[in-house]
Image (tube, rainbow, N blue to C red):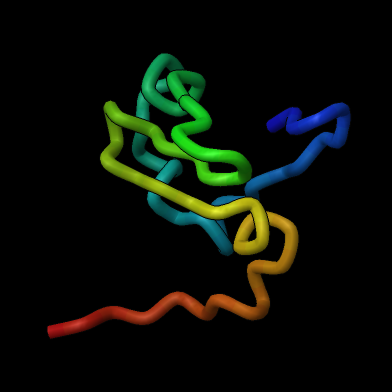
Length: 63
């Protein structure tokens, strides 16, 4: 992902929601607000800080 000239890698182990998405769906991303990104085909929204520092946002499952 390229944001303001900086490239970011979103590995599946830290961003598992993208793993089963079609390439077209993963590439369909919009910046809804500054540094807030939304993948409408996957219903995923992420802030740039969570992309830069995924360790600060551990994956949790709720019941």
